[in-house]
Length: 365
Image 1 (cartoon, rainbow, N blue to C red):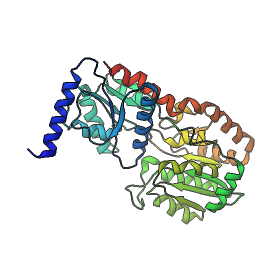
Image 2: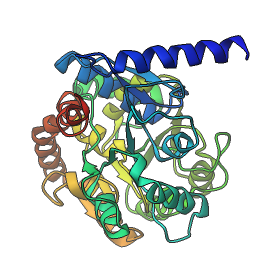
Image 3: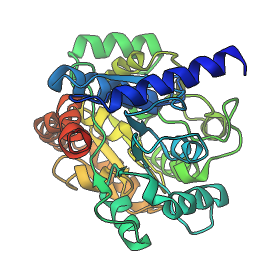
Image 4: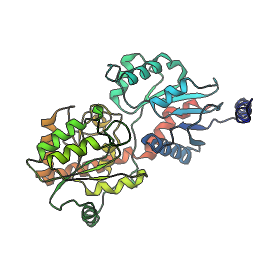
């Protein structure tokens, strides 16, 4: 037997022995790919939150194979499916978060992954979703309701916050955004792959986004602010329409936060989502949100009160919402103010407390 494998098995044996000792308290191992994806940051906020508030030992890992007597939380559908084939011990408590997906066949890989989770649901102590849409789907699909928990995503309200007008002006000048332009933000990956992204990832609605923006440009002077990789499809469409845009890519997630200061509105045109985080981030930053009714958006946003909603692919309603924000500054300010009053309940510290109370504490001896 090779030395690394022998050491892993010795570690497994030691963990199993410790798990049988009186007073053993499992630690939380939150499984993420550790490639600076969105799920990595979810896991970071959750593990830090439950450790600071409740003393639960918690850490991120991308190698849960040799754990025993612990709580293993797979941070996404794909991590959970990979975990089904890993060597597990019955002394581990197993949790998985599944953000979005359906079994319609539009994405065979996604449908197959969901089928595997449902077929092996007995291996999971808890399955988490981040919105009522997915909660309803899992109930319809026959997931044991005792395993199902719904907890929304969170937002770092110390990081995402309103900025003073001077900071806004300085940022817009640096980014080349005209002072009189109505600036719309879109900060999520919507192309296939991780390179140019010339092939649209239709689940994210980049075709709808371009349709809305090009029609809006005939009424208002626009600038589009983009982040994230694989935005080539949208960039090409904006260039063809002659709509100014700026594209910024960051390696470090917190570097994204200041960009919200440049925006007049944030637009989500997705057909399917688990979040997106842009809904919470824009609300926390004092930026009016316009979103399709996907993911957590209809759970969080009260249409016409603290944000604006439309059905998927409803270009006319999305266009009308943005036009009103561009023309009625007082209305936009009221939406932003109401969103700022609501957003503290989604701060990651409060969300982490929900994870502890509803998921981890019940799994502790």
